[in-house]
Length: 33
Image (cartoon, rainbow, N blue to C red; front, side):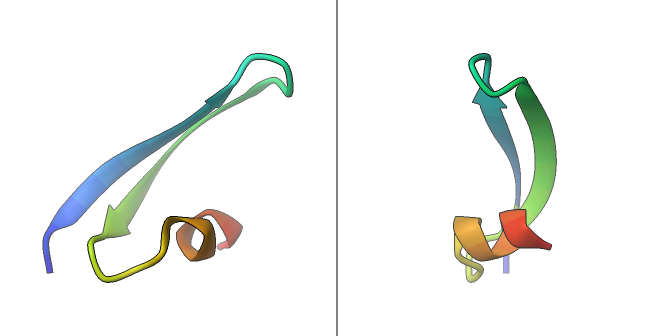
């Protein structure tokens, strides 16, 4: 599976997170880990 860097950015919530995610993993599932 390919690997992607996924950035979750929300200035309102003060969130700026970069996670590694595979294309066979749902983004929400990866963010919860």
